[in-house]
Image 1 (tube, rainbow, N blue to C red):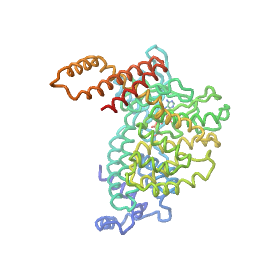
Image 2 (cartoon, rainbow, N blue to C red):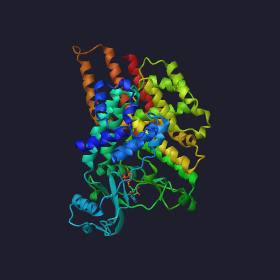
Image 3 (cartoon, helix red, strand yellow):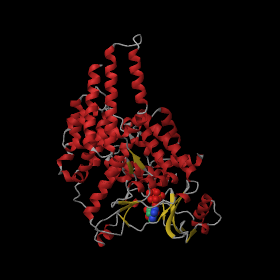
Image 4 (cartoon, helix red, strand yellow):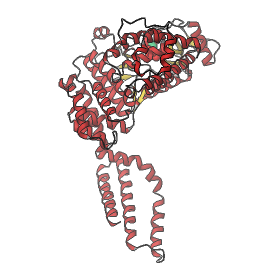
Length: 533
Ligand SMILES: Nc1ncnc2c1ncn2[C@@H]1O[C@H](COP(=O)(O)OP(=O)(O)OP(=O)(O)O)[C@@H](O)[C@H]1O
């Protein structure tokens, strides 16, 4: 990092008095000495509250810090409410870079001499310009010779070096804060900055964004609720992404939506539906759902469809995470806090020696005020924020993917209520949660697991006759023969295993009756084998 940049960042942080946020008695002598030696850099904004000073400093430091502040503003679990509100005001207003330079970057990335070799009507004036990338419009002649309206997203030149340098300093600041601040254990500055670093570096790779968009598009191929623009992968590189241009209405433009008689209730409910489908069906969710990335199709306002862009940040969940969410939500909305506490202990999410009574009491204390409202007005996102905060106090490591989900949920709820203030989130979401839990524990779940194991059994099947033959043969040889009764469990297990395979095959053939009967034989066989072992 250049020393000039280091000096500039230090100067900005000090002139907004951010060092004063660390209690003086916790600052070691060498840090006090270093601060004293920079005596000409004084807090020039003493009259302003801490949150505002933080926002102004980040604004001045540029895109990497602004984006960091924007991310922090969604972490209501970490920041006081007033600071979070201040940070939400951060705008990344950055100057667009030269259109001609964008054109050169595209030509170089795609290995062409002139942009007109692939695109006609390339517009050097950007359609949009953000901190990391800039978007231009063009027309692409596709492989069938048809003209297609596209947008080309180009990463800003030299941004990587600037980001690397700023991130390095940010990590240093985080380490310092972790050492000096009493609240460091709760705020986890090092983890927060590392998470941010990962998100930011992911955003720099447009191939990754393209791949995410392709996956999401596939997941919602036949959906009435969500459309993801087509990505032209042949023309996409790490710093250039070419995709279908869409002409939807920005979701924040409520007037335009109302003007075309959009069914606002359905639109709001579909937002929740799309989110829960992504989470529970696909385990793959768009995690940058700010209003600038969501549009509504102009077609069929009575059957409104979202259009999602900017798939740079996605979240994925494993089965365990989904179980955590579904079971906790259901227990919460039944106001069964003991069950919530018990779930955390039984699943090993909190240490086994956690006192259920104490944990239950802590959850009740933070959640009862939330449930004091009608069910329709309750925020899932806030329930999660409170649950995570309580669980952390009881030594649970909340996984980053769950935090990402909680943030996205807050956005989705905010969006839904902005579109249709009476939106009943719980009514819309409950079927998703209950169906998922049922699927995990019911007979269907057993069938599914058997189905998943079928390839293994199919592979082992040809070996079965050999195994039976060898085993029987061994029994005929008195010297090697184990105790006579020991063959019974094996034979019974072979029988039960075969029934299980046949049952699986019946399931595949949709012959449920035969499937259940053979599954019954399999279970009986296993029980008999176990009892005679
Ligand atoms: N497929 C598209 N069709 C039409 N306009 C688009 C398309 N993709 C992007 N845009 C326009 O470009 C803007 C910026 O795009 P995008 O959000 O992908 O960039 P970004 O650099 O990630 O921005 P941000 O940091 O604000 O999320 C969008 O808000 C939208 O107005």
